[in-house]
Image (cartoon, rainbow, N blue to C red; front, side, top):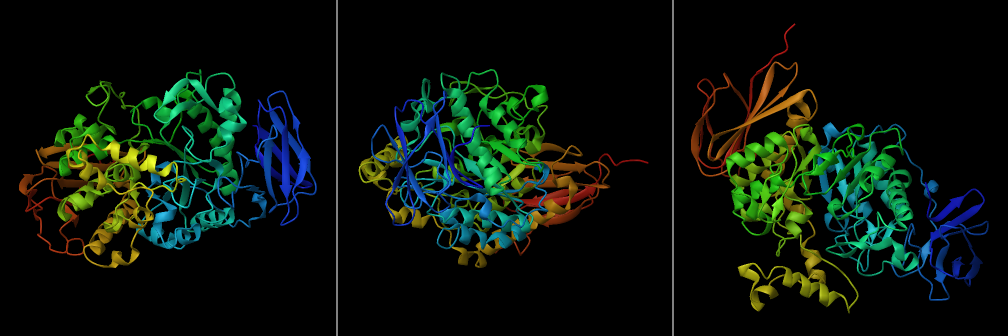
Length: 617
């Protein structure tokens, strides 16, 4: 596998950069305030320029001059101390003193994912601030932390999906050793860390990679961000190697436990072996411990999670958005955009929970074409589900979360269904305490680009009646305004106060229940049966082979009403109207003999019932 960047060695530093169309390429290095030294690199037949220098050390700054032009940072820089336009810094990954030799990783079946944005998560928005909250996340019941994209971006704040320096963790969050310390500490606590990576496009400012290698972007395919990354045309072999080298760098140099691949539908590849399959295989081969590779992809294509031996891409899972969309349509009434494809019925919810996703080939009104494949051979834990994530909040004009829209009783019902479902649950930072902060779209581009981004943001929502007028459009927060970013930062103090404390208690109780009851986890030894009790109530029965009891979750998503079970004697384990979870409890009446359950409002009951198929000796 090809390597890129400034690579410290025993006798100095080796520099390797791909610039196939450059006629000349000079390396400039600088130690402290000393004058820069110009150095000669040698080009091979593929356009890879390289050279080793004994007098260069970690901490030195460097840049490249292509064909006599102004110096540019390394496209594979490990750190940009002065931002994406500045000189790069040589980083020695071996200088960090790791303590995680005994870390064995996390199996996919145990994953409870917590997605967070480092800048908005805690304190001053640094890796160190995030590390200070790791004990809290461990106690909450999180087993996998997903860090939103870290690749350095223009300015001091950004979602991360405008990455320009793909190998360099953003200096807005701290230095590379701070990220290593965060991951090392997470491993000490038994928590895995995966990193969100964006390979389908580069940010609109500060991305110098295409200037070094024009073949990185092709003309064969197009995406919403412009020309597609070249994965299947002339020059694509090294593009693929560059991106896989980036993936391996997070695993090897930072001990990351895997990746979340952004918008894989925009990684357009007509090659015999899809790039995502190739990348996944390379990542798995990088270490002996289990690594998790997930994809964000709305296609509901089972081939992505099938084993490689069966012709699949061998991903651990995909973001299965149907669950979110059905729930949101059902409890909040959203009907625009892709919500047009959902009615929000209990029938849809039953099918989604039973299958992993809803669309298995049906015609999509939103896409104007069929969507999805049959997931019959897909293990349910390979579907990652949520009731909020960065996209589903931040792609709303006002960044409002689900619990900002629905009442507390509905929120508790939705949370219970999420955390007891057979799929892999994902929490978005702050949802556990029903955070008051929205999660808005924010950027910090240069003055000439920023206003265009703000205007594009407002134009994006013109199809919605409330934002169709000029006055309505002006109500959408300006992504360039620092106040927009500040509004998105979590207020940790509020988690101790009602009603936030009650929501936190419910999340914590459900996650502890999920961890302690084998039937609520995901594996080949567990199974799930979902059915509608009426037009507003779903019952989900979770079983584990060999257990003497099953778990039965009855969730009412709308209004009050009475339902009847035929599950035999029941023992209540938890209800969403228990005083520790509801500031104004309205107890759910349960007759454990007849199975009659009366809800005064939306809510959920978790029950223990006799095993449907007990193992016999």
